Amino acid sequence: MLIIRLLLGKTILNIKLFKVKPIYSSHESIFCYLSILKQPGHSDCVRSLAVINGVEFLSCSNDYTIKRWNLNSPRSVQTYEGHTSFVYSVSIISAQQFASVSEDRSVRVWSINQSESLQTIRLPATTVWSVCSLTNGDLVAGCRLIFFRIEQEKKNIFVLFIIFI
Picture 1 (cartoon, rainbow, N blue to C red):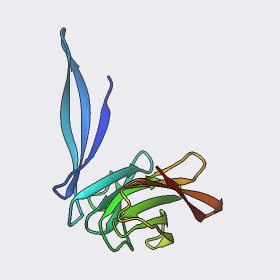
Picture 2: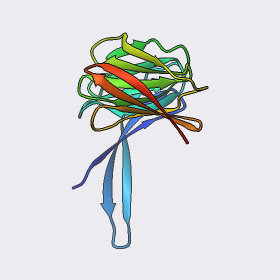
Picture 3: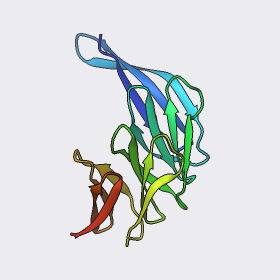
């Protein structure tokens, strides 16, 4: 039987994990949602989630923090602080690193195992809304009318390129 896990960040300060189990009838598929995890932890709304591995994930929030979670723990495992405004997006770079973006106009690169950021890149934008990691380890950050490509020059050193649209 197919069982899907669905992880949701919510604007009401918590994270929910559902097991989604299909129940088949002769006419259509019906999905049964069983809530198996409800994680409080942020003091403001959750903006984005990123999966680290099969049991760990990151969440970011309007409370200026990023938290690492383990599905087997009722509390967050680690809190990452450094942004000075809402954190809108997180993206996994590798098994050891992730990136985040914020309304403080920065992209931060973090080690999964350290609470302080490894690098902060200030962007000439009002707000940075999204970040994603490319397969080669480079980052792309999205803002209004501008995309930023942040290339990995050396291990753990990122350089900024601006792409206007």
